[in-house]
Image (cartoon, rainbow, N blue to C red; front, side):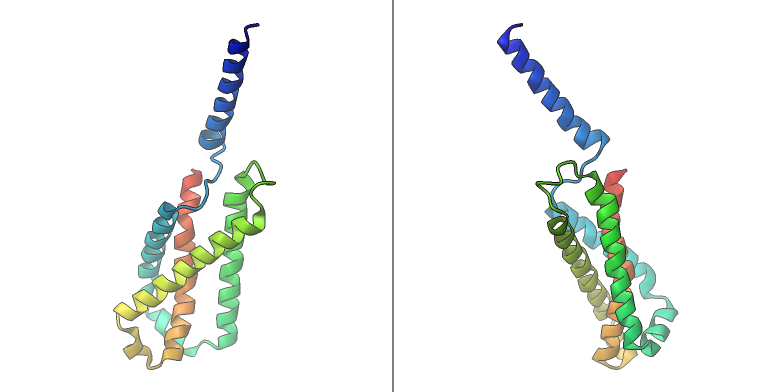
Length: 161
C-alpha cells in the first residue's frame, strides 16, 4: 500500500478517536473560564432560590456550629462525588490527568464560588441587619453555600448530556 495512503488512514483513525472522545464519550475538558462563569450563574440561581425562604433565617440563627461543620463536610462530599462520577470517570487518559489534581482544582473553585456567591447575596440583601452579628451571617453563608455549590456544579453535569 502507498505510504501516503497509510499515513492518511492513521490520521483519519486518530481524528475519529478524537471526535468520538469529545462527542460520544464527552470527555471533560480542562477547567476553563467558561466553566467558572457557568458556575457563578448556577450558584446565583440556586442561591436566590433558597435565600428568601424564612426557614433559612430561623435555622441559621438557631443551628449549632457542629451542625454547620456537618453541612460543610456534606457539601464537600457531595461535590467530590459529583466531580468523580460526572467528570473524572469520563477521563480516558488517567495517567496524564490524575484524580487529585482534577478534584482539587474543581473542588476549590466550585466551593469557593459558592461561598463568594452566598456571602454576596446575603450582603446585598442586607441580611446582617436581620441576623444581628457577623457570626450569624457566617452561619447563614455556610448554610447557603450548600445549595450554591450544587448549583455551581450543575454546569458540569449539563455538559455531560
